[in-house]
Length: 470
Ligand code: PR8
Image 1 (cartoon, rainbow, N blue to C red):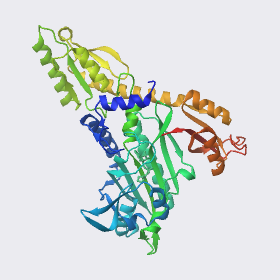
Image 2 (image 1 turned 45 degrees about the vertical axis):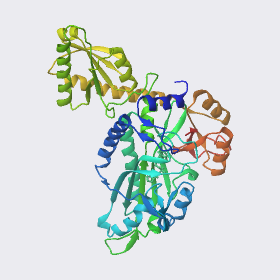
Image 3 (image 1 turned 90 degrees about the vertical axis):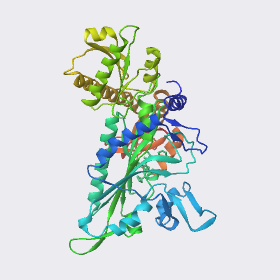
Image 4 (image 1 turned 45 degrees about the horizontal axis):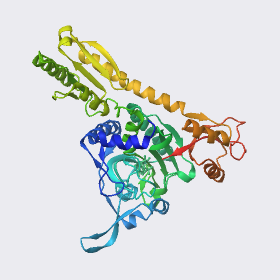
């Protein structure tokens, strides 16, 4: 993939993921194929969240006075908010913001809902569209002005410890979710100057796209009591005292779908994990003049058993076009498994299976008793292979460097993420970012005692990571 950006735009179009011709910058149309991938991706996420969160749906408009109550938060978003100023021809008494995120929509309501310590913890989530007037270069699914798939969770707790624990749990939730999609990630705590507006600290997941730039795909924020104090969210303790709650929020977006496409895709097009593929299996009958009906009949039986016993999404492609054309199309669309069945296969009780992930062709015995399980095992192997291949590439792109020159060299040659010792000072970090033209992603873990900051030479406090970012 020599030019990722071009490849990405072409595949969105060819595989009919989104139509980017909608006449508003940064806003796109989900097409049926893309929408299905989105739907199945969300299904996985929702199943995990539903284990201990409740789904809600808040209005999209936020009154100006609520949005502006939390000073740090509003400062972070002031350049990105779209405003509704009129209802028809009438100017509104109060401007209404299109939510850029929903803290200021939800928290005034939380202050009505939270009463007693017995109400806590509260854990809600919603999947909605949010609007951000992004000034950086927009890109479909990656940096959009209408984020159409914004999953945001908001939790309320009694104590600082409980909120900190929830941050850990949220990290585990996103880890599980991304693992199911085979998307590799680096988890770090963002530097102070890059945390969510209003948060005490932000933990972020970054993945790496094939052009060597990292993409922030999920974030978890510990909000401490910032919003609780602004929106008067208090609870009565068992002893009858009134205390401010502690909060967290975490979210992700369409970027996850961009990552599925970008990370697993190759020169033949999309390559989808089986759980999110619109069709998981395509059956292509190999038809000659003789025996056409038998082949089709057999294909339909195979399809039925995979659908009914395996609950799989199976498509029988019986169009009257060349088989080669069908192969090309389904490979481009990323369908994980193709089954080819011809008259000879029926006679021999065999089918040909072709894996999209490895471009590998195999002959499989058609044993009606075990066929569905055999195929399910192949599907599982596809996911495991995709995940380990993606992690292998990712890990090979994370390198430790000992000085600034090495950092620059690594990035231009290896195109990935560098890890280094850092003193943790904001001024030093920003100077370093400027020198190497990269962004500090964040910090992780403790550093060995004798390690020095690669920029200022003072003792290093953290292992930090930097990269070129989206
Ligand atoms: C919050 N409040 O809002 P966050 N296009 C695509 N994806 C985006 C864009 C964009 N323009 N901007 C952000 N994202 C908190 C947590 C509720 C939920 C994605 O956090 O501002 C990024 O992957 O960090 C980001 O990590 C995620 O949305 C959450 O946005």
